[in-house]
Image (cartoon, rainbow, N blue to C red; front, side, top):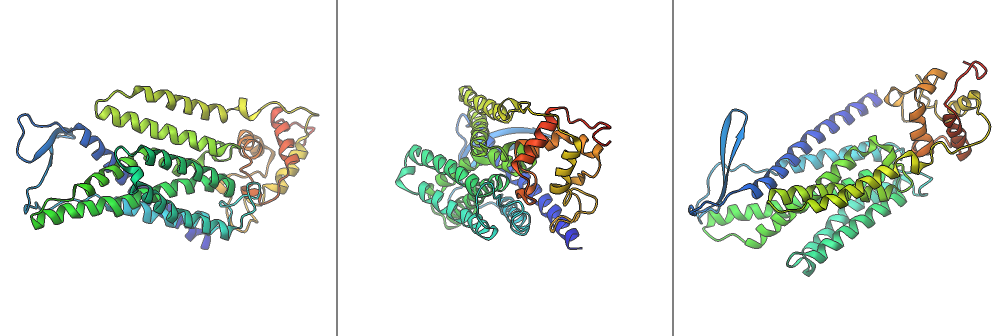
Length: 402
């Protein structure tokens, strides 16, 4: 029953997190596009700063951006703030459920560091708090004056340093998701600590008949722009647990760096085009970063097919899998966490092992992401034996015991 409840909590939180994230990201990108698409009226029309005609479904829409005269506040006003809050309020419990309440199963890896699960939890939670404080201090400091290039350079350097540090302390999978949680927390804090207060000032100014604080409005727009640049990298980290070739790679920190460049670069090109500015040259570093990721995760880099030695008997392969894998991947798991085979994958017959030969190559031999946290103590010699069997064609013949 406990396992069933946890499964439904996982499904429910994940579903709600995805729905809230779609709502937040969709409105955020829409308003970024809208700001760039607004057309100034010629001749000027009162307090209208710009307008745009839109076509959606079965009708035309006229959208205007206005400066409100002091003392005039229309009603009702629709705010877009709860999507961000709900994304975090569903995402953090999901992080706790999957990474903090499973005994370190997904959180730590003895091959990476000797950190305990409790210490890793403390690192993860502290990171979310400290990252926002440091980021906000940088962007409220003199470094952010003008175009803020020094603050921008320092922010990216700190992000890359955090990614590298996480991959040296937590498991690769946990490092990726915590990097995303860190940036996602900064994004939500931007909304509630900087953007929403600026919007409240706009309303208070309109009600009081005074001019709103332009500094707050500029800062709010700046933080919205920051959020848009890291949106795509955060989305990748949310999906990264499905791609062990990235988080399980020996150079996983470099792969995440490159994918952050890809995501931010694509968003930069989109913003530039929305503002009708040429920025296609940015596609060069984006393409280079993507090519780098593809090469690093390819068999050419991972050294597939280079193992020699005598032919490996399938009985030896099956013995390794029986010792190291069946505690989870069987119809009746004996593991203390899994009560059903993860993803329905079992290795109880020669045919089931052979059918998932390439999965074994990726997870066990190339990325070492299975067994999880090497919980069952698979040795390098055993991984090499499986690798040689795979390179030899993953054969199962009558001599081997079919």
